[in-house]
Image (cartoon, rainbow over all chains, first blue to last red):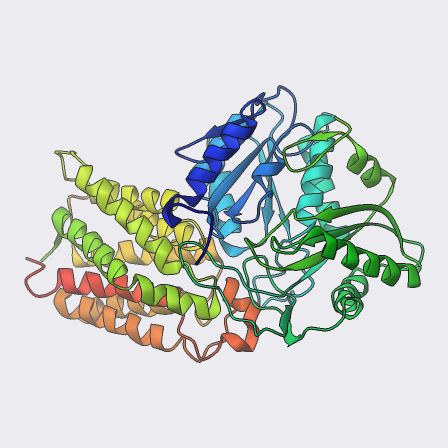
Length: 333
Length: 217
């Protein structure tokens, strides 16, 4: 294992020290338990937005804390859900009297820990709503699975709900909006290489030199199928076809197209993917009216990408365009 | 015959030792069908528990319920993943059942374990056969209750309970997971032993080792 780390046990702690050193003017980094919170929190009368999850997906979630997006993020160990005490601390830190929304990715650990945290917060008379994001079409959604995983749509939901919260919309409104984003967003990812969790010291899975995994999860969970690497337009078709068919997206729809890097894939390749996606959608009469291209929800150093499409209406478009000022996403500010 | 405060502490410590010894094994089982962190997470949590119990200066060691709640809260705040809330809930609910008790009768122990397992079931919304820790825990509770009801000694009952957990654990091998991250694998989750059921067996085995033979008085 060759990584820019000092000790696998200290990865999260030392990265948080870096966040504090870099963004201490805008963010507070609490330790014991670990929470990244807006420096100006709590904001009176504003719904507080809290998310969190395992570390290793940076900039999500800590990089999305700031005006127009999250009020706090709870970083867990690498690829391990954070704990309820962190979430409770975050919830208390951002509660400005208008309630707190927990945005939770659909992983059993994240869901269970956020449920316990919500119980604890309600016991302290804080109004909490939770919305679970489950947008990964690679996973069968049935009674016999834990349901679809939460992936790329999470980033979009955090941005859009953050904008709505800045407008002082109510907790119920912001939670409904979050469910609307989740209902209109679909994602699927692929990997060219595995990734190595520092504490494990070896790759989570093995891929041959000419193999790729289609439908990969953001923790290296296996996907739908393993195949030989093919040209980019074919890969884009393998990802975008199930997405488009699932919602479905059709001719005349306006979408936000999000081409996400898994951490080890350079931007130049993501733009090639974006071009192929643009062609794929144009052929179907689907208009990309907004886009986001880059590594925003990563899997350590994994090479690969994911595609997320979000069906836009005027409300979602306006909220997407609203100012945001976070380390990971910034415009209009 | 009863379980004393110090025996409960010994049980928790024995579980911590078992988890530490099996850290790699649990993680290996988890890497086959999960996300390769169960042993790492449980070990981090149980080491924190051991630290907490060692640092405890409570001179009134009379409330087993409070002890179990401390274990539960420590696990909830240190393990993460799904294991944290599930094992945390197990101990918290056991603690609620044993609240205020300086020692546990065999039936108290069985009731506490049953309450803990019911809590796990409620928190995780899983059923027996879903390939989870419940596949080890539920048969263990049933066996314990049955054995006590039929007049078995506490020694025999806790041993039978651990054996039932082991059988339940082994029986997860052919199962297709319906809960947790392993469920994403569908049929591919079969032919692997569930890591959560495995750590649960370690928990019950630690109880049998601690409470039977020279353990109980």
